[in-house]
Image 1 (cartoon, rainbow, N blue to C red):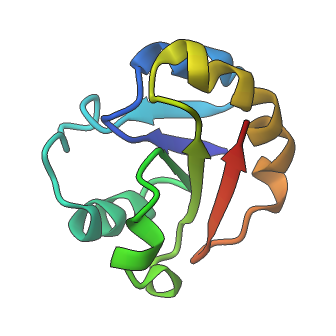
Image 2 (cartoon, rainbow, N blue to C red; image 1 turned 30 degrees about the horizontal axis):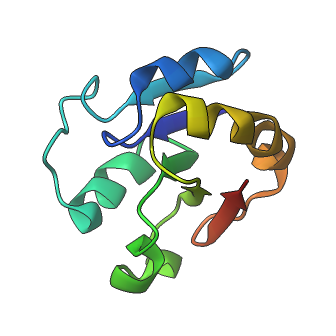
Amino acid sequence: MKILVDECIDRKLTREFVDHEIKTVPQMGWAGVKNGQLLALAEAEFDVFITVDRNLSFQQNLPQFDIAVIVLQAPSNRLADLKPLVPEVLAILATVAKGQATTVSA
């Protein structure tokens, strides 16, 4: 599975996703790109977009994008707060639906 991690998430979190092809927004050269355009770029190359932006599903018409979105909800976007969410993210990767946001929280 090809996963894109938003730029507001510590890139060290990507080490937790073994057996998946994973890139960060900055690695793709897309840092600073706004969400709508970012989703349009991402859907061409990725299956899942992981973010901490809780407003994304309200600001964007997700059904128009051919990519699943996972929103991580933790006390902060620090690595120590996000890392405990990884097992649940890995467990739901196979079932997340494109065009929808799925929230994973502590």
